[in-house]
Length: 370
Image (cartoon, rainbow, N blue to C red; front, top):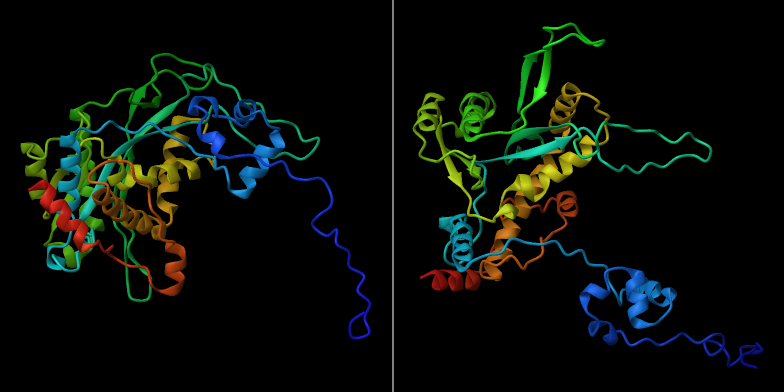
């Protein structure tokens, strides 16, 4: 008894009940990776129960890891990657406080296939609700359209209002052809929308000269009309040579100083469209149902128009973060895509426009290239 209160506790607290099975997690390292791709495989290899593995997953002692295949990089590839990253540094910030350019004059272009539907969908249904029945002639040949998108970095005023969305446009590779014969849906001669099954270099050039370049002029901020505009593309065989005479002539006629630039090979993380924009756009696109080519083209264009401008700006910051990580690993692709919690920084009013780099890392990369 203490202070008039009887102590009724007992000594069995935390010392009674079924004892936990102690498993040496170091044993898991000795098992070949190919034999621990699923929980069931891991259970069989370690000779323990499923509960043991699941509990360790929840406790964080074991983690689930997705391992995508990455492009093989030669030493020349790594050198080109480093040169590209260093070229994106603001020269006025060197050498003591290096940081990346604001990227406001760069337009990213790339192509992307969008499908009418996915082979497998997941829905949440109420008990007793009729299950949806989806059909197509062949699930290996679902209708699809290739689009070419052009995106620049958005701009905001001091109060955070959007001055320029950065959305130049997304354009489908489609044609209008008259129907060769009548059907129950339309008479012969009716114009039908057809998706281009293959896109050659001349087609890309035609879209670049006659669609993308003319779309820049009415949308580009007038205060930067006298500055150089860079269109960044990857090294696909169908893309246009930066010194192509027809493109250079069209770029001069637009009233702007527009130039083409190719990113180094095997460099998908440094195009904001491949880095995150296309993936987000595709996820949003599947929120609407499209049964025809015309409906699919409109759905993608509508999704492009309503996509969050602030998230587009976040991808440009992630692009700069990726370049910083590439320099840390000396041009390799063994880094993880970094995140800085952009949403929280926006709420605090601390979201940066440019990402800083470590001066010693930049000096090391310069010495490595020299």
